[in-house]
Image (cartoon, rainbow, N blue to C red; front, side, top):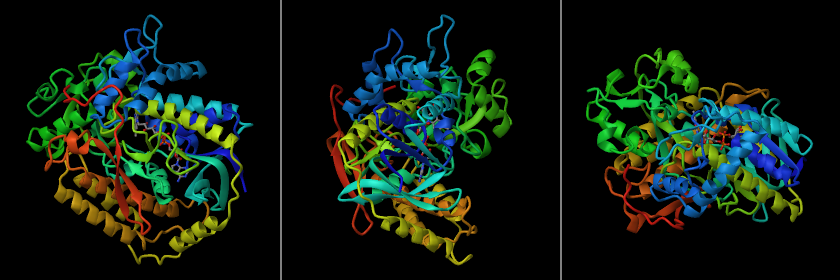
Length: 564
Ligand SMILES: Cc1cc2nc3c(=O)[nH]c(=O)nc-3n(C[C@H](O)[C@H](O)[C@H](O)COP(=O)(O)OP(=O)(O)OC[C@H]3O[C@@H](n4cnc5c(N)ncnc54)[C@H](O)[C@@H]3O)c2cc1C
């Protein structure tokens, strides 16, 4: 049985950064990932990463912008840690080889991003995630003597022994073989759960596995109602057009050709925070001033950005516009709309990545520290993955140094193997297809748990999610083989999505106010007296979600009205 001091599930930016930190702290490390590490969703990150690097900037200004962006739900102690450590982390990336864009004077160039009071987003054209992920992967190979890589291994459950996390069960995607991995510390770095929605900007692999694994093992989820809709996704398929476009100066226009953000956010306009811009767009669409097919979209006009600059700094979205919408964005506006992009909620952790379950850590999009609170600022997620990935790696290594290797039984392996055999044995054609259930889940969530929500819609969504959970129990798979059986893994992922979706809807119903990404048309005001608190969701003995609360940590910034 493989045994490591620190076992990391997930090899996106959070997982790779955690692995490097743990190895540098002297731990033996394994990184296990269901896809090849450089295919993690982090590779799709486009616009950049925030850090108060400019001489006229200050990390406190970054922290205040983040607190305000979070609609005062973010924990300020964690936000201070993230923002204060950001400049050193970005310079570290630069030193290990990330080719951040520089200006004519040779300094790191910084672009404007939403909700920021100053230009503070470092970038590599519009492929920032790819650039960082590949450099970290080189470093992972460099530490090959201390970091074992299990690429294309799918984790099916966490092993909890004596009240703590002692390892995981995983399946080799290539062969179907099952294995138990023992570890002194386990770090979940499994990314987000965007596939609960359709459409979404998230890759097919973002199925909330880590949140579901932790939840089933008894760890609480937090802020799950806070789901971010990004203001600019292609109207037909949900592909992301990076906020970098508006950072470079692009305008949003309605059917009257009006730059309507001037009405909603007079000083920041297109660069207000994402929740504010998405709501403004949806209001324009709902009030009949939309454009494109059935008036479901808004124009994003990038032609106001000098063409040379667009071709240099936004070349990837030039390709996306041409290939997926048939539009040359340097010459004509493109039709976009708000689309699901990010989950602010996740597995509750402290600033060292520790979850309340002994030995279990979480970092990156799977985690909720909570630095994003009700709404994440663009370019703060890459930062979150790296800062808290590193901190979790360091803490997990230190914990492992003073801990004995747990003795782990193989019983959980047999349970999971039987579970998979049972899925494979379901009679073909008896139940609905996994893909159909996933489609209904995604469209339901996108209808009722989106930019605007109300009690009736949320109750409908909850009923649908619970019915789909029952249907998923009998959903048959076509592929009954062992080699690269993505079909059976898809059935397991569907179960994870349903757990996450239920937590999102239950939390959204519970929060009877409007804050950040949660806008309840039946409770349109923010209510600090009642709701300046986190909602947590823990799994009951009988499998039902149990609601709890956690206080918001306030260090220096008292809640105030939010204006952009
Ligand atoms: C299109 C797009 C553009 C974005 N642009 C930006 C941006 O410009 N700036 C910014 O700050 N943020 C951006 N974001 C958000 C940011 O990219 C993500 O939040 C962040 O990269 C998540 O990193 P992660 O390490 O937490 O997870 P991921 O990169 O998603 O990695 C998850 C890892 O977990 C593994 N995994 C999952 N489940 C299992 C399992 N069951 N068993 C084994 N392994 C598993 C996967 O294989 C993968 O390696 C963007 C997101 C998208 C979708």
